[in-house]
Image 1 (cartoon, rainbow, N blue to C red):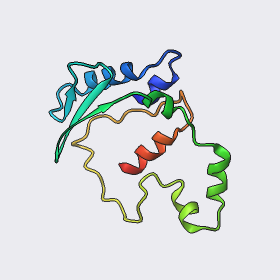
Image 2: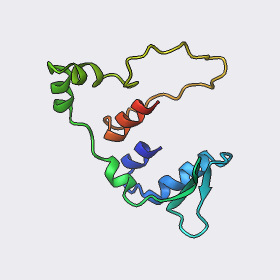
Image 3: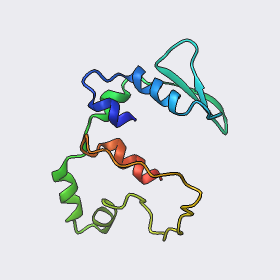
Image 4: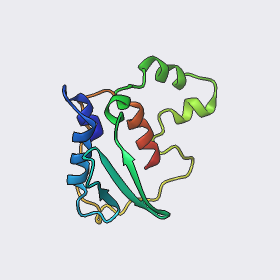
Amino acid sequence: MLNEECVRPKGTDEAFVQKALAANKKSPCLIQSKIDRSAFGIHHYAGKVMYDSEGFVGSNQDTLPTDLSDCALKSSNEILAKHMNNDNCSNLEQAPAASAKKGPKRAKSNLVAPTVWTKYKGQLM
């Protein structure tokens, strides 16, 4: 959703938050701010934490330079060379996923180049 909002000519932080809230309206962990439409909250294990989305769209427009990525892949440093393409960011073997329990997988967007957030998000999953 954030990448989609970044490619819109007039994409805004507020529009991103509203789309995220609409897509996750049944989640008990997501909190909608009653005061600020560009703010949201997440109910963490430690309690409720409110966030302001100011700058989300602007900071996500930084793409990972392809020359930097290519250079890292060719590096003699094993960490850089091996893990630059590893979205799991782990040496552990992944257990086979129970595909019967999951819904259909969303297609990757071809609208933008991989952003720093896209790479970071992929490593978290």
